[in-house]
Image (cartoon, rainbow, N blue to C red; front, side):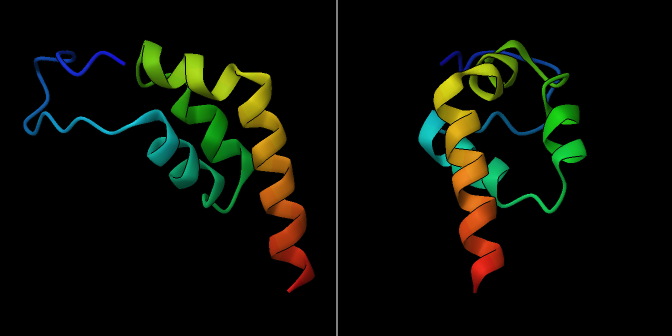
Amino acid sequence: MDCQTPQSCCMNICLTDDLLAEIFCRLPRLKSVIQCKCVCKQWLSLISQPEFIARYIHHKINSHCM
């Protein structure tokens, strides 16, 4: 995880991959998650991982069952 970029950001907040994955899983639409891939290399890498994809699908299936 690279917490030093982007420098142009007004608030440089460092989030763990696990926390980011949890936030992405809670986004209401897959389109929103895909758009997040364009933000930075860290997010692209995280969202592209097979583990994240499985976690996202699992979260969506379980959230619709409730």
